[in-house]
Image (cartoon, rainbow, N blue to C red; front, top):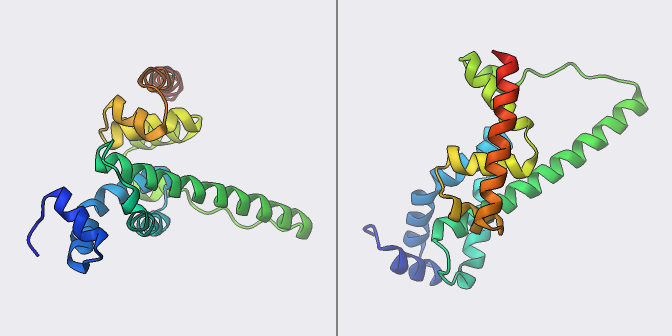
Length: 184
């Protein structure tokens, strides 16, 4: 199947055509994976989140009305999948902490993912500073600078006003400047 225009591709996906579904996934998977990786900071988990995103998107495709750009709609699904995974991760960490205290056992510290992935110290400091931001600020930074979304798209994705996105971005910039000034 040759590359179909988006409206025809979505129609074919709704009809369950395997070639159309394959084209949809291959077209949008890299962007969804990058979004998941930037939020989850774990490649294997981001890969699973991307798969879950497409399963959820294909199930919900009949409800896509085209009010927002398709990528915005798809990113909203990916964001929700990632948020669910972060909640599960926090729950697992709390349970693990309880079990460790109960067993009085401390596991060896695992190397930080940034240390393996990032070679440049400045990039590592920036990544750590971004990860330390409160979730609302971190999400707007990730969506704006890692995924190059416009403020209006971010607002649609997060279901907040463009002004709120601007304010969160401003606060994040201020916090990052302060934290990185202390590093340098």
